[in-house]
Length: 274
Ligand SMILES: Nc1ncnc2c1ncn2[C@@H]1O[C@H](COP(=O)(O)OP(=O)(O)O)[C@@H](O)[C@H]1O
Ligand SMILES: [Mg+2]
Image (tube, rainbow, N blue to C red; front, side, top):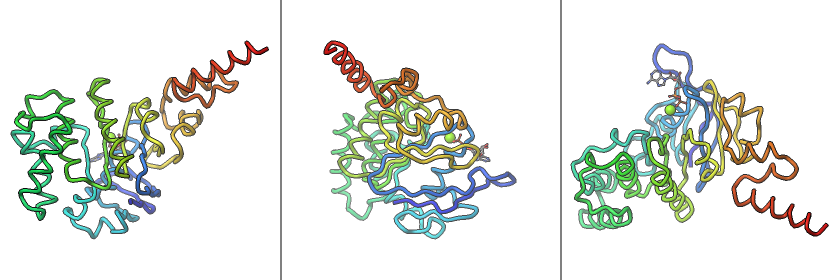
């Protein structure tokens, strides 16, 4: 779905913010980009949706070079959820907001189809449509932004810190919705996320960045268990991973409360049998 080939990027008058990054995302993947502040995560996702063009190297979306494709071609395929929903929301009602995105990308479908699509999305997100975005809470506004992106059914969803400023319940609602898109419709998801517990719960693949470079790329639990890598990237792994590593003796692979409990219970069973 997306391919980066030796991509480097420098902002004007600066050294490179992204350096020689190469990876590809297949359809249906759920990947997270991890790294400290300034590691180059946001720059990388902006290169991935063509908002920025590489200084050198190539970015391909569905095989098309972003240096040559148009904004509208990309908008039909790629949905981008910003960290701050207020940078996306521009209409006075939730319905108008959802319709705005639809008209931009699916205008050729005709007004009736767009209204139907908007109705379905509003219902799904439990909005009447008459709400005024700016009188809603931050979490609700994030849901408005997500609803208008999902309305156009993108094939690729890019999220830059989607859970910042949300409470735990709001965070789960947003992330569960994104997971459903990923599982049911094979939408390719890439998210920048500073909450490692969320990464462990939802992402399957982790790309670790530091100083503009890609340090590692692999399955989420394995990446978190690499203590040396975590240190180099200044990342604190999720508590469940840290606890498992600390306990050792079969607990290293217990990366969820369920597996932790299973491991304890199986040890207890062995004790009892003995
Ligand atoms: N708009 C910009 N103009 C100039 N430099 C920028 C801009 N955005 C980011 N940078 C610089 O690029 C580097 C990577 O930033 P960024 O991609 O935002 O990292 P992250 O999202 O991992 O925190 C940092 O050194 C940052 O100062
Ligand atoms: Mg960032």
